Length: 305
Image (cartoon, rainbow, N blue to C red; front, side):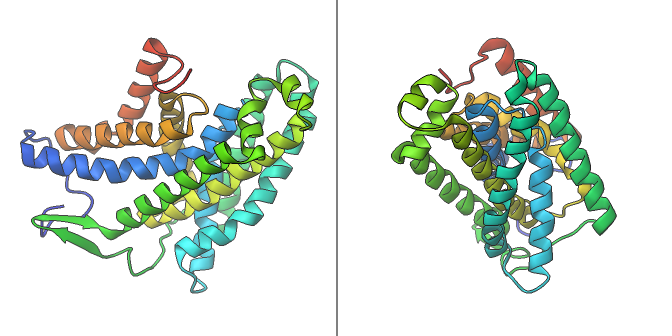
């Protein structure tokens, strides 16, 4: 992010951590952390609130990125494309949860193990389908903010990170308000805690879960739009993000919406500093290291109860 350096790959070789470099790493880590929170919030709803082992979440997000690329090639702005994809992805999520419920959850206590296998199968189907439809080449989108940057003194910040950060904050705030201020939102938060009490309030837990899983899938579509704005996508990119998304959700505390943004910032800043000191090859280990540390020290997460 120095003037004249390629962005965002300014952390190429191991170096001593000066205050100036630390400042740049923290700024970049904050932007990256907001993006990580955005791509993880759908999983926080599905896994944290509904107790559904949705390991296919990153694959659904990559599918949303390819759909965004398809609409963008027709002249639509990537952010608007992501918003336009949310209704059909919402319906897809509702259908997917209904199938999961009828085939696994309704049948007994081993739904968790069989559900993991089911969603791994969904992820594999999506990945293979994308390879057959689009090939293995990387895809990118074009927009006024994708190739430009904003200068702050000696520091140059890619504008696409600023856009992704802004959309992520709006998304987090909207979903947090929905879950805390509406009857359906409070029912979603209550369904994993006490289903009998929810039935006494006149709500059907299965329908509430189906609705919430639709929301999680719709959010994944918008996260896919942010993903392809940040950088090129390929069909196997979901393997890169499965560790990061689960790390953010577990670090935040299962079902904690407000904690997701804080956990994303922790992961983003940690990755940024490690990337500066030791190079890009060590960055993916940060998410798994944080995941193991949190599970060993505080299994309920930093903001869980």
